[in-house]
Length: 113
Length: 113
Image: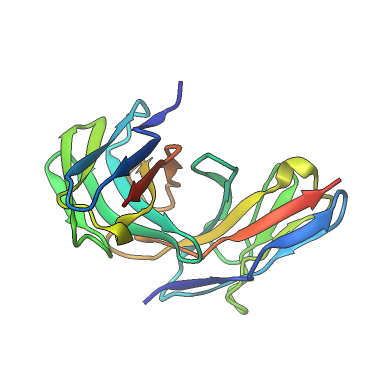
């Protein structure tokens, strides 16, 4: 079945540091890929998505590129802020039938001033 | 006001009690979902519904039941709560169609003692 593997957290960075959170996936066909963010005490919200190979999703300074050859969708941001502290989830929607969403286990990011 | 509202936000109950978690949405989406979040396990799907008359089991439906009272309302019941159902529960909605992202409520933290 489909699966998503994220780097273990927590990740602690200083403000203005470069962020990479690794995500790799296993899926049949051509899944769509998502990053969701969960701020403390809230539900998940969509951060960005990409629906086909080589697509780049971007939002709020975050970017991720759909790499089919390496089955990866790594999240990057050039300069993190304290307000980016949250848990980040990589997810995919499989092809065909009911498009079940498969989530990674989440990566907690803490940004310190 | 939140587009996806869950009640209660927190609940403590005893083993063997029946409990209902409620979800309502103003987004006009046909699809509604219940997820469970546990540390280190990501999100797991309990039940999903594509319309009022279409309800389906997810990957961990044992011990749970649902009711879709209207397009905007989807409730989750634990018939006889047990301690390993202690978790954070999320309701989500989505539009129909491939690639549609999920929209989450703020969650219900359930503790079963």
